[in-house]
Image (cartoon, rainbow, N blue to C red; front, side, top):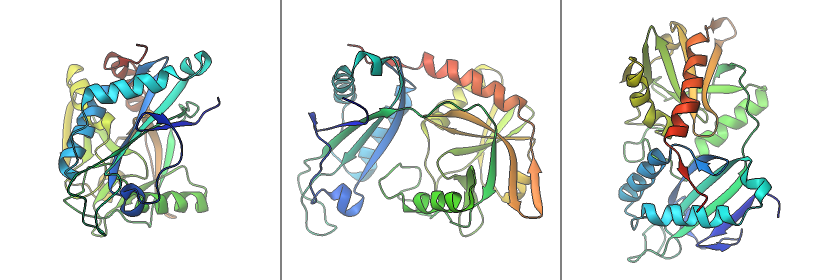
Length: 288
């Protein structure tokens, strides 16, 4: 069978109940993972996010053993040719059916969804960023989590599509820089990487979670702080990251028609290569 393929609670199926709370209310979360020749990259960061999301949403715990068992079992169903490809595995966990309105059911019967699809073609060209008019919402209760309510990102991606932009920078209504539309954002100065704090907005990505340790091993510094557009316009280099594409250097930021900042990309390219090796060292084998 061709990709994409989908399993729900262990059964191959791409139809979910109309009463599932993930569909009705976005009551759930997800994590998107890169798998190369059966090696699941940066697994510890993904499971840390899964565990933390269950805790914050009050879900029944999803054990690491069950996650790996389901991922391995579904991976085993793919063809030998597909297993040798670069793949994207996506775990979605919802609260399932039940409850009255927004009120969750007293006992959770969750829906564990695993999707397999081909990874996008690798592109090493540096990106150009534009400033999105779509703002990032602020909510301390949800900040950092990759929950299923992603409408602001959908609207931002629609904005990119309308304008034929590669990527965009999203800010809060108060002007704090948060992220790109589907990636975390970083500035480089000398051997120091700075990224926006995500205590009020945004998604704490899995590459972002693992980067401090990788940087420290190379003698680099790490900083999280509030960030403004002026910081982007004065940065030495800028790069993005997400779980599937890794580290992506940025060549320019278009803040407005009259305000364009160009960046060097040498350090970002070096970090991208270092990340490729580092995430492999953090991988687990799904060939069981």
